[in-house]
Length: 454
Ligand code: PFF
Image (tube, rainbow, N blue to C red):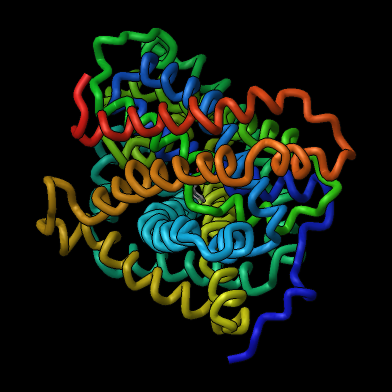
């Protein structure tokens, strides 16, 4: 096998390109599909407050830590730890990241497959004139099938692989730059319609009126898992993207902009969905089906709904794509740089194995629906293992690595781009990554999985 030529490593081309690509990774199904349904299952407002707290106190520091590691090492996630901490076992975080990437993309592509079907349905005008109940059975009928969900999943994985083969600048960056702004605009249009529905009040109260009695210990772990999932942190995706950021970019500003964009889009998605959930009599804890049952109802009530529905699902598909490429890139960068496989075969190998696992996840709503472990089907189990276990553990070790192994002086040098920028809050940042974030993650995690009881 050929050795990878590190002098030919690809990189992002512009400041906006970096933000668009990282925001493209962060903003995806996690914001529009997962955030509303998880918030719905955990009682709404109080959950969201905890979520916001985790983004601020843990999410942003983990993201900045990942950028720091990646940019200073200029390697894939495994290679970064090997390079920065030679002759130690820190590379195991890289192994964990690659495993998490496999798992996440396998169930992510299931939901992406649903999105692709809904692009098709929107184009075929399949929603108009249907009642809320009819829309529900339409979704469930499709999801429980075999051929169509698998077909769309394969199509989606093919598209993901196709962009990744093209590389960082000419693939990933090019698409993210144009599509992210359009998505934002479209969600705002949906918000305007949603909050003017009769009965919108109840949905807004559900979202914004915290009722702490609805939180249990598992909700807190789920809020942490959602923060990690949504920001794309804890598995080295942003170590990998960070390694393509050039040395003159301000990492702190990038991390803050990306986290802000991600959080705003999640909240806006909640505002689009919950008023409609209550207005159309859907249960807020309907689970992974929530947006697919809710949104078609709103589209029917908007002038030009046909057009908006089509545009929305296309953009949701694109948002999924700009995220899925970042997950696949973790594996491909590892295969090319560490195993010396060329980019094209590496991409095909990674995409094919992930699709194979992904088919099991997709079928867990159909022929494999009776296969379960710990009361969860394959899909939920993959999601839970990645989001609530692997990402928090990865995040824990990433902040410990930056706080304790790299240390303050090294980190300041990287964050300041060798003195180009002033790094104002370095002491606060180090305090967080050394003590606060590891402690918080460990407590939430141990408590959530039941090893520690408060
Ligand atoms: N952050 C993406 C989303 O919210 O849809 C999902 C994701 C991408 C998770 C990349 C993890 C990751 F590494």
